[in-house]
Image (cartoon, rainbow, N blue to C red):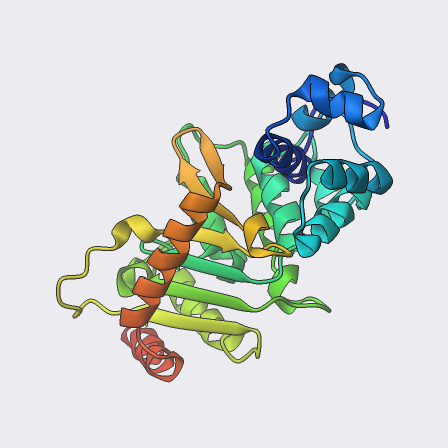
Length: 283
């Protein structure tokens, strides 16, 4: 396998999972290398994501690490064999790497959850709404970069309206629906588009209304992407330096709980649809 200068988030996730399996087996990199008949440098490179690993070698590693979770091993083997260069590769070198990593993550998702309090989630945005958001960035983006971001965001919609859509559930606070991003007309079109997307069998939208008593789960804003097995789920959160990918089992458990808690107080889809219809009429 050739070396990589810039591993993707998916490649790094595979590397991290192999390191976790080795550490769970209480083996050093040197000991693992001896079992596999390779040198420790190769183990280090695999676990850094700077070089790939064949499916055959991955399964040998899992066996030597005494991993009995067959579903996990099968999922990791699929990741190891993956040579997909998806549509997002056309943006490499043009957009921040985190944009491409999110697109790749979505491409392989088994389901997707969003919780948002300030904006309509990216997968549900219109081009004008997304453009209005990106145009407020500081420092201001050059026109070409702004349009690249808008085009990329619109292409990401393939996750829910492509040939193989994934189950998608969004919990959106009423505040996000009332904020007039881009002005009255842009907001009206965005809400109308949201209603159209809600007609899809794979899209479920629930609104978190203003009139809840003692609601304090604002910290639950997230993008939650389901993996082939729960251990390979990922949460993506916006941070000061860009997107933050959360992968630890403990943190994933926290975010699953947060999602369920927010979902429990959100309106059912029918009532959510009624509320959005009312907001459209108010604009």
